[in-house]
Length: 154
Image (cartoon, rainbow, N blue to C red; front, side, top):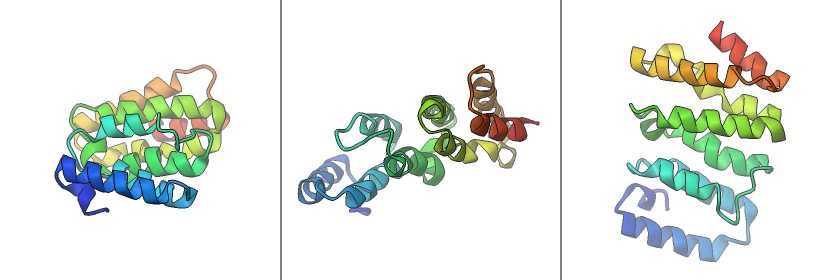
């Protein structure tokens, strides 16, 4: 299944559908199914990840589901998360702001890829810092998220 997620879109879709039909009743297996899709190097992967957030088996209040989609995309899909257009960084900031209201601890943990901004080229550094500043500008941030952002931008 992992191999097919790195191949032709038609093959990928068929394999994922077959796997889903067989295993959709197993929550932990579904976490892996989400992760496989979130980490695909396909060029349109951010759109796939955004669609997964609306999937019937995804629940933003479930930390395992959040990690298997958002965490996997931002932490393990370096090709798409670090796209030159900064869309991966904006996506993560958007999700952190949503999750901060629901689960501040997981929201703060998801920030880790943005806190490593110093390890990237200057264009990506600026994009990552911009998203950290956007998060920091929210007046109603949890202490957990604020501390991570504050430490990273100090």
